[in-house]
Length: 279
Image 1 (cartoon, rainbow, N blue to C red):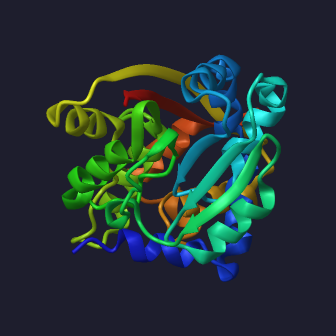
Image 2: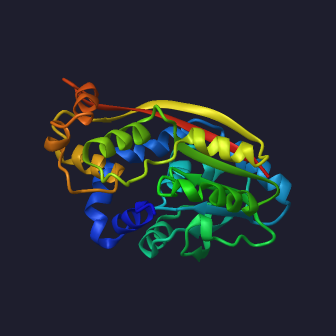
């Protein structure tokens, strides 16, 4: 059995707050790039036209600490979109994350209900949601449960609605680093994160219509940001047992980290697939 969900939940807790904040020193920029990658006002205005003169319904899968709604408000101008308030259902197996996301929601998002559960155990309401998204949210889904998770994701999309998934491709940092970390430090039974390619195959194999937009950028940190980089990398694998110095001395991580470090600082190459799933 995969230990990914347990290790993820342990880090999404008050005890893991310091690691979370170190992680977001770099990772907050993931959400800025996604906010700039698409015309999100057009996405939400189209959803509003389909819904009519009622508030939109959104399901935020594995809501984390609410970084993506804030990125849309700050970088995509969503507060100026011609839409009603967005009634937001927060879904996460961590009560800590639900509280963090609820407190962080900016206008036009409005917390409506919370579901303390995993996606694969979620029972979507019959009416579904106008928008369902999972933004860098599926890394802790065990490979054996991916099919069920994607079935629940699709079932949550209302007829005519839209599903959105942002997830690292195989060549992106989050997948490439995790696989090298497991090769270096194990444990032997640990499963690698599923990549975006596997998510697309699973969805299309079940008959879903999926469009893919690749978003390419680097996550960067200055040359003296050692503590932030260490916290970021530890959080990338939900494991704080190994420090940056040991990572940089152990293959196959050593070569990867050497290639990511330059005189001007750290650069971790990201290749993120932004998937659109038709309802």
